[in-house]
Amino acid sequence: MDLYQELILEHSKRPHRAGLREPFEAEVHHVNPTCGDEVTVRVHVTQDGNSTVLEDVSYDALGCSISVASASMMAQSVIGAPLEEASRVYEAVRTMLTSKGSDAGDEDVIGDGIALAGVAKYPARVKCALLGWMALEDALAQSGHALRAHQATQEGHRS
Image (cartoon, rainbow, N blue to C red):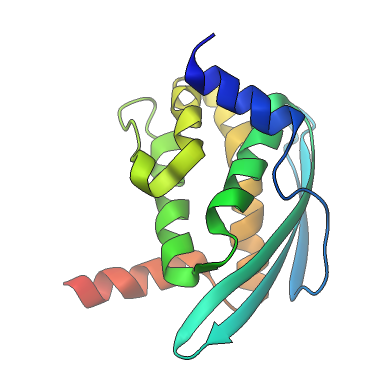
């Protein structure tokens, strides 16, 4: 079994940082209607000087190994991160998963999430892998901290 398959199985059998925790500013529940996967995500955001920090992301994921593993990888990669960094990780994962296999991803940005690169070749499974990430985006938007708006602001500063 290759390393990536092992990472997915490891995260699905023993999800990192699983469980719903307090405090939180927003909670969302997303369902993938095509397969029945479900995830509930809570976000806790704090201010550290001029930086907004994604202090905690707690989740409860039910579904296939790809969906559960992806939620685990998401939490592992963004908990404690400044919103700018979480936004970069989110965009890198979303781009990789929606590339139909043309974007292998950047392991330095995505971390263990790189194991999901092969999922991009299977459109029916992409929704499974994106479920937790889309819930994260939604929860942050509900808490007043939109990931995509933050990403656009960061890209505007680079121009």
